Image 1 (tube, helix red, strand yellow):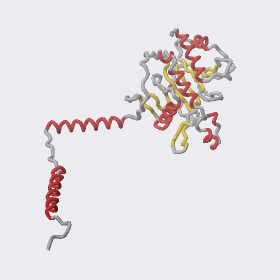
Image 2 (image 1 turned 30 degrees about the vertical axis):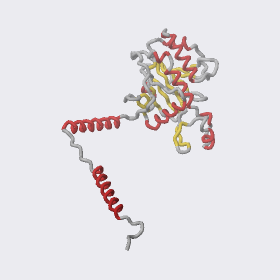
Image 3 (image 1 turned 90 degrees about the vertical axis):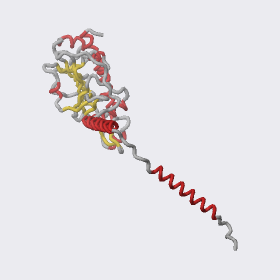
Length: 289
């Protein structure tokens, strides 16, 4: 009787030997010999682990680091009797949850949201405080080191400080993102450093102002119209100056701590334009270019 058709015993044996060879090869690859570490290698790994642990602890100490908020150029040191202070009152910086994210409300992007909640979109103008801060920080007065401090108080009464050597973003979208993080995390540090460039502080603002400072408020509705350069010259060089400017779309600032309330133009001016006139008048009085 012959063998069944299609059965080849020789091939079967070869296949089994081939499979055994593959299994042995795979087993040898899956079980590599452990590498023996020398004493120097162990000490290096321990040092690397300690360095990683120290870096993690240092990162935990930093309140918040926001990339893109670098320090400005180094300014000249001020004496205690020299320098001006700016206070921006009633800034429109309000956070609300729109959809699934928190945003700074503004009249351009959130008109429908504001109307649904019974609010006037014209009152939500965070771009005004953005322009005002750029006018202060970009002025020759600040670059010469003559600006002592900048404070901003929102319409809700939240007060925060802006260091004069911070570089505020030029675009509003980036600025709004920074303000949102500031209001949520209470401070923003310099990129790569622990210095707080923007930080929330407690009210009232008067506790941070220089002693014996002349606090001057500005409004077009004031009956006292003055030439700003002459007004600054009449005060004298030994008196610290505090300029209080409204950072809202319309209305009048109402503060109890101002010593004087003046108008510097026959025409209503924006906050940025008013600040430019103030900075230029002080610069001319101090006689530098």
